[in-house]
Amino acid sequence: IARIARCGADEIDAAVTAAGQALGGDWGALSATERGRILTRMGRLVLERAGDLAVLEALDVGKPLKQARADAVALARYLEFYGGAADKVMGETIPYLNGYTAYTLREPHGVTGHIVPWNYPMQIIGRSVGAALAMGNAAVLKPAEEASLTALAFAHIALEAGLPPGALNVVPGLGEEAGAALAAHRGVHHLSFTGSVGVGVQIQAAAARNVVPVTLELGGKSPQLVFDDADLDRALPFLVNAGIQNAGQTCSAASRILVTRARHDELVERMAARYRALQAGPALEDHDLGPLISARQKSVVDGYLALAGDLALAATGRVRNDAPAGGHYVAPHLFADVRPGHRLAQEEIFGPAQVVIPFEDEEEAVAIANGTDFGLVAAVWSESGARQMRLARRLRAGQVFLNNYGAGGGVELPFGGTGRSGHGREKGF
Image 1 (cartoon, rainbow, N blue to C red):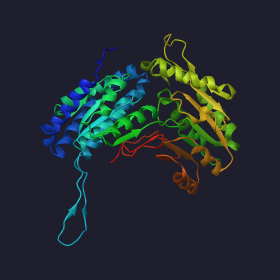
Image 2: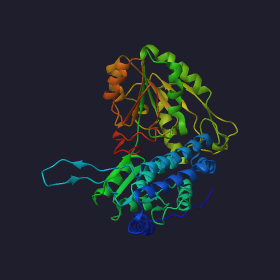
Image 3: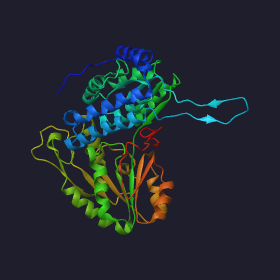
């Protein structure tokens, strides 16, 4: 659908230089209020062009058009939020000895590097680059090689909105070339990376050699806990959608559903009914799921499904008969009565597969929920306020939803994980 420049170390160096010059020039001279106005204009333009951006994202990533449009609207909201926040971040005065005035200031890092993934380019650009620009940083953005189109469109929108040249530099390229060069560049003062655990470790190691701080948002194996007193009518859409949205290619996908043994069969039956109605097809036709991002990712997901021979397959959706031959489609799979230690219950699949795991009591539920290397998002479904509060504190996750599931949702809410889900927070203040 497009030919995209394959940039490398030289282009990254030029972008970092341009960002540094912007900090010492027109961009660095703007007040916080003026920066906020530019971001607000950017958000307005994104919203006006949300339909076009959604088509680009759907074609590039493979997600259904309605989901891509929601991502464009979210990008606009991030820009609106951070545009309004730009002049509202303040320091403090600190009581000290007589004769002293002690205070703190909030200052930009300087040149910030942003390496964003292919699954939610617009949303992650908004939460990462939007916040950096609001605070007066100059950004170098390296989009994923699999999905660069909306990042490039975003750069045009930024210039049209009046962002000074050099304040934002979008450099497409391969991860091992442009991404590695950005992570190792001595002119970068902060790095933000969203992606796999393995690449995140490489990014952090490269940045550590320059003593550069890094925000990492990595993988997940997020659980939703369903208790005897849960309202299943309310829970079911969240239980299923949080697993199959974007064909399961979401770091905060609810890939584990934990349920009391007493309600296991009922829940599986009701989830299975929804699964059997799910369809995968071309992104622009707006089915429940689109194709996976690449042949490589389909191979990964197919490999995990091949490990499920010892599991009870409760239901599958279907790939539409008229879907293009050779497309990277995978029907959604629901597995029941899965033991917590099974690989499909421990490892991030990044595809449309959910496991239902029974538990006996609250203690076992917490042990299972916390029993992976990840800790990104969790949910508790129960009518007991006391149980909700207990578990919200005990679950090892960056976000815990109560009778809801947002998959990291909410522009205003800090987002990030623990363990191999990463460290640092983005979104909100």
